[in-house]
Every structure is written in structure tokens, then in C-alpha cells.
Length: 381
Image 1: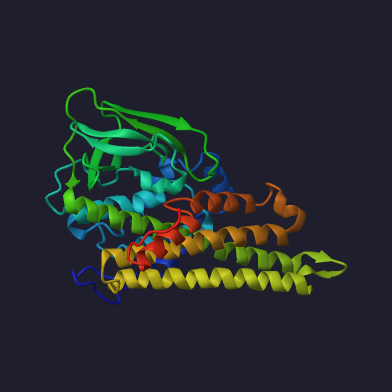
Image 2 (image 1 turned 120 degrees about the horizontal axis):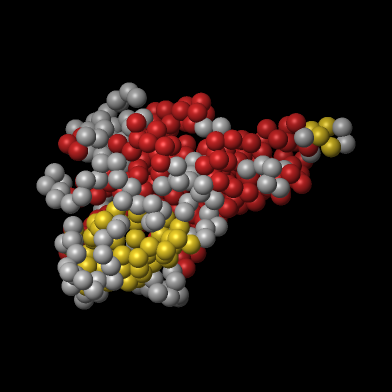
């Protein structure tokens, strides 16, 4: 990668394009359809594959250099997720790319907690479920640690650490804990997952024994962390969905140019041309939005945490809608083969549906964006 500029803190700021091309080149060379299906058969859990990516430095992209990382802006993780989505790479990649880097940025060099280098951190944040949260979802800060439950949590059964984002006892703030996954009072129950790229589990936290580890962030610092965490979770989801939409358009274009009916390629039919043009427009506009969102985040042009959160909500809302529409259009244009498991279209479609509701579906994000623009006036539920 080539350094083209530096951030205000002196960290090298590689461009989104450079990182995306580097990740894409590796996946094109080493991650074919057979390997994808094998990994998806294990719902993304393959420690050897994760170790391979770790050796390549993927998970050190945005980790501060004082902690042994590359010190790139967090936008580097979004660049990687563009290619991850394009190749439909399963596994806890958003967690590995984002959570340690973001935690270390907020905790600073005096971080006293567990070693985050190489650790798999599962995110237990009820905000990830949006309005689809189960009735028992929610965490509150108790005197000895967080209390409550959440379903589903990605890769909780395989995680080394659990990052919990709980409401404070008075309900007016946030408390962040970083807990060993095998600590007393933590129950993790694997559940069936409709997402082909992720293992899911129910996490239940009870504190009936001795006090657990102290929170790593409280008060305004925890509120700032939670706001930035949720914004970046949405940005990474948008980038992954953008990569998926782009790949679906590319593969569908190649298909309609060779699939023949009535003695000529179906891509020559006007109805097919119109639908494919619509899909290309959707995928291209989403990619442009992701590029702008990442560029603004890297340059710091979003002046407040609220502004960044709003930009992230816009990107995620549009991405969730576009990716599902593009997947449905791709399945339609593939005809009968689009409805079989012989192609990977159904895997992209299922992943798009799983990400659609992650940290808010388009409808609830639209309410959130509108409420923010109206100054918190509130609106119809």
C-alpha cells in the first residue's frame, strides 16, 4: 500500500481504493467459489482461515501503532469490507476488523484490560437488533456487572471476549464492559442461524457471585464510544452490502450475455436491458454513497458525533434497501437457475436479508434520520 496522506495524529492514511484492491487481489487469488462454500458450510467459523488473514495484517489495519497495528483510519476497515462483501467472505470479520481497533482508540495506551491482540470480541449491544429485539433483549448495569440477555449475538460461542454495551442503573447513560467469555455468570447458548455467513447464540448475563471486572468505560466516555461504535457498525454493513450488490450486477451481466433464448442472448432483449440498467444504477449509487461516507469519516469533515451517526444511518438505510432489491433482480434475471442452490445467488440474498435489520432496518432508520433533522421532535412510531 502507498501512503498518500497522513491524518492529524500522524497515522498513514491509505486510500480506500488501495486497501480495497489489495484485499480484492488476495481474495481473487486465494478464495474461489469452492472455498466460499466450504466456509459457509461451517457458517464462517474457521480458525485457520482467520489466522491466515491475521498474518496478512487485515485485523491490524486500524489498530493504533502504539499497540502494534498499522495505525490507519477506521475508514480502512470499510475499504476491506467492500471486498469482503463482493466475495461474500463469511465469519467474524467485522468484529475482528473494527472492535479491537475502536476499543483501543477509546481506552488509550493505559488500557488495563485483557489483551485485544488476536482476540475475537463478540458484540453484545441490544442496539444491533433495532426494533426486532426479542422481548428479553436488553442489558443494564448491575452492581457487579451487566445483567440481561440478547439474542442473537454473532459468534458468541466462539469468542474470547464479550463487549457489552449496557444502560446505566439510572437509565440515562451507558456502561461498557469487556468480559472473558468464560467468566462466571455468562451463559452462551448456540441457536440456529438463517444467515449463511455467521454463527449465532443467545447470551445471558447474571451476576450472582463475586463482583466481575470493572467497566472499561463509563459516563460521557462510554456514551461517545457507543455512538461511534454504532455508526461504524452501520458503515461497515453498508460497505459489505455495496460490495455484494456490485458483484451481483457483474455476475448477472456476464450471465445474460451468454444465456440464450430463441437463438440469441437474453441480454439483447429490451426488458432484460432495462432491469439490468436499473440494478446497475442502484449498485453504482450505493457505491458512491459508501465512498463519500468513508471519505468524510477519514477526512473528519463530519463535524460532530451526531453528524457521523446520521451519515452512517443514511448509508445503512440505503444499502439495506438496495442490496435486497439487487439480489431479487439478479435472481429474476437468472431465470430458473436463480432459484436453485447450484448458484451462490441465494447465499448473497440471505446475507442481504440478515444485514437488512442489523442496527436498524430502512424504515426505522428513516424515522431516526428524520427525528434528528427535526431536532429530536419525535414522530409516529
